[in-house]
Length: 80
Image 1: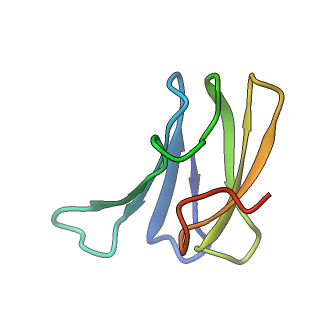
Image 2 (image 1 turned 180 degrees about the horizontal axis):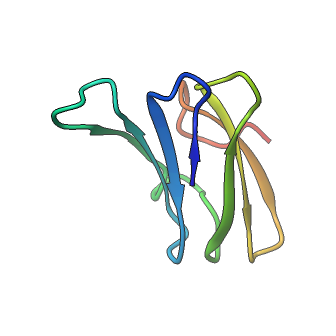
């Protein structure tokens, strides 16, 4: 899990090869803005996700499948 520098977006990953981005700008009901499950995410569980320093749009993930992927919330496919 990681929280963007602005504090409004949270990036979550875990046991499933799935990454979720949640937008907390609505305090009453945070909404899921992206779900990368169907887009060549990872083949095995994800052990880390981090926003790129100073960004709430770009982030990277590492998985037990021995890959690191760089993402942008502006597109739903990995950048690398």
